[in-house]
Length: 363
Image 1 (cartoon, rainbow, N blue to C red):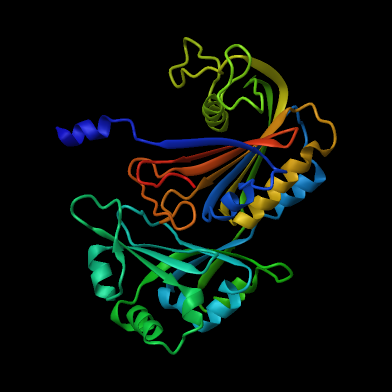
Image 2: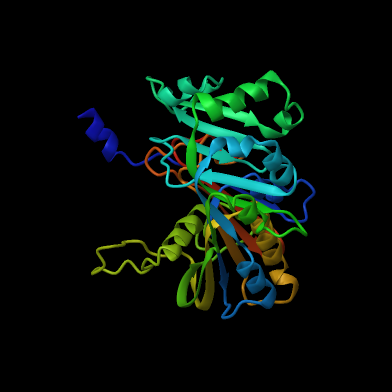
């Protein structure tokens, strides 16, 4: 009965909302984008827009590529050649593919050179490496976290520590995974990853791009200085967050009596947009690419526009072992970790960051 009650409970989640200005010297917008490493979906919504600018469209079409490598031995990611070629130069991300964070062994490589392993109890003990219990294991510890600093290892390749890790991955407990990999280094072809892992089964992928124009869209009224909204004047950040979820899900916003799928209705006060442009990019998307998109959206208002604001929403992989920075991430009932920017025409912005029950508070 206790299990049934837990299943019926609404999953706990945490939403942090804050406002600032892109021109403020203490604005953290870039840092928060750069430290949310494993992103699988990016969407932006532009009110009163029927066609993308050339600059935005070019950025959208240049968010890839990324690669899927099958049965890649884990020791390949700690080799001196890999570290010198990819980890030390540019931004390199990797994430195990088709693994469930609450059930399977999962691995992530972060752009700062940290290799994070989330292992079940048996695998952890067989590796012989030192780690810590997962914060979300419950009373009976079944998952362990190992963090390896590849940058530190690269300076001490003759050390006993490196020899032990290499021995563990090559001989004591050889581990293989399917990996998603992406790498960006200005001035160097990203296809270098393809040639480097040519001895393995590797596939190049481009992110999937969906472009659509929404007509007669009911939309909440916002005021940049009123994060919590004002009765009969403007809507709050929380109301906008719910509205965006409905728009991205293509849900009805009218709460019609014969609609048994959605009873949601647009918050008030609202206005009707003649048209709005929605772009969604799905794949394995590096933070650097998202930074470029955010910067270009900030420049959207360099010339007068009908739109009072635009939004940029980013969702992370539900089964990534980290959310922001090196904060441990768990799935529990949803696995969500995401953020949304509302960019106003005066360069003010709202930032909304959401995580589920098995996560630390967003930074």
